[in-house]
Image (cartoon, rainbow, N blue to C red):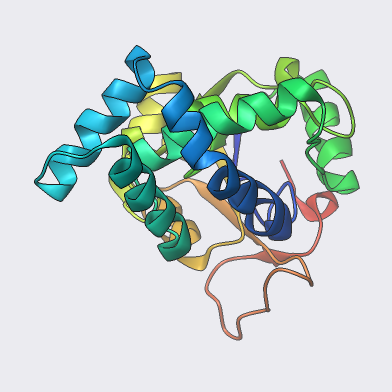
Length: 226
């Protein structure tokens, strides 16, 4: 019996293009000024500490910014980059200059599932802070109340089945009681290996159908059976 739904964001709930074409360039553009302006803040110093450990050297504000911007170009999915991007995006969302797009079917079904008593969770490579910003500033309004929890890569990589086992344990259900939705085939496989129920979401503008894929592929949340 399904008790919870776990969703990815990019390519699943929202277009990949929003993150790639809007959020990433925005964080890169604002990186220098943000780090310089907030250099002494504890959260920036924590990011600095993590990046210095990963780089194996001390970094000035300009060097830290240069490293982080290069990681954006490389699409590195590492915690300190995701954290600093979350802080930068918050400024943009707070100013009202950025709104998150949501696929209509995803919005409709998430609301329906919540009303039916299913617990809803998010698992994304973006930081929990960034996830909350995304869902609190959507074109449909503030959707935070739909969700019971958020997970990022601090719980583990999205292509590692152990991450999904940890999530199930954290929310207090068996893996087979969780439905996981993602556009990424490797994430779908990893979740399936943990015994979660899985669907690969194939949005025409973001992904292609995979022939002989061993798990269900859908183009809309309307096709999910709980």
